[in-house]
Length: 240
Ligand code: ADP
Ligand code: MG
Image (cartoon, rainbow, N blue to C red):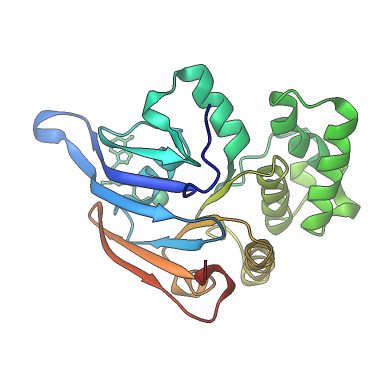
């Protein structure tokens, strides 16, 4: 995989996605183009059904577009085979989902080590990096707990640690606070703010204005189209 170092983290060109065919076809994305630069903190907003998750799944290489194309960190995703795609996903992208998606009956530490294990990182380095990532989300005292022994907010912080542990080019979060109470939402948003201030590139999907207010840039989807792309000034993720 050839990565161009000064390339945007995401370069999306006229991406479309249609589910199904004929009369029942759903045009979930109708030609989305956008660029995300290193250090951007972007909130993708839109009503339920506007195509946010579809876009996130494509950006995260979990699904393929019907039309158009995109590059991640300079790599043309459409040109990759399954194996190369899996490697790109593992190295370049960290996911955070609304429902945490942690593996049950595995400790927080083991959950966070998992992407490194897939990436072929040795046991000692894996452990050290996973502990550091859990420390970064304030969970050093919970590393041996299993998901069902953790609150929702703590589980989502484990999920953030798991997303971060590979030092991905892009952190993708789909409604990361959607299942959390106010207090845990504030914890998660503070962590994302810190990550953004530290230069991480974040694309967060939300339908809540309070959450989007943390991002430096807001992209709004209506019926699978970008209707607004606005940078805010005075926040860390806006300037680059
Ligand atoms: P959002 O995340 O903004 O709520 P989605 O991307 O989940 O929106 O959905 C966009 C549109 O695509 C909706 O009309 C939804 O019903 C449809 N859709 C999403 N996933 C599928 C699928 N796997 N099969 C058929 N239609 C789908
Ligand atoms: Mg969704």
